[in-house]
Length: 233
Image: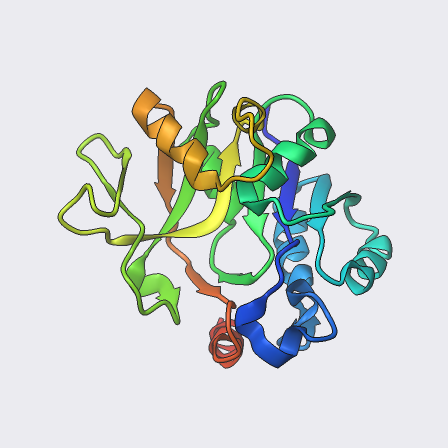
């Protein structure tokens, strides 16, 4: 069955945004006239998803008020009293997500191109304890000057940067993952990287390369780049 639920990571402090996050959480920063969280919700709705779980922590009131007015998706909040990082956030939200693979995505990116959720599903839904990452070529990662995150081996499986001669693909922040993998970690605070390393060792991590363009809106200078990308589309 095609997953119909997405967890949106929205709890971070957004410190790289400097003054823009003094009075609001990063997902409420406007890009092209709309809060970043709306761009994430638009993508989920367009893909036919029905449910979203959103974790909150830093200055949550504006974001929670905004989400309370969302009528296109069923929204469930997963408040965090401390920052749990991405893996810990997924672990805390797991009881709200239900059984089987779900999408997870970052709230601070914008997209231009074909349905990224559909691209992940078309590559194959991961089995128990596994995940499928959505990658984009570095040339399609707008405003991302650094190195890539992954390469692909001859069978199309992801290989970490550092374990390959080069890493031509950037992780987009969108994946399909079995939340049970996070429940198996005893600590409350940890990164998704811990889960991926275990999956790589077990042969349970897969990847799909997306053909659209993507922009990580992680700092003020990324906002005009994202807006120009969207306008160009």
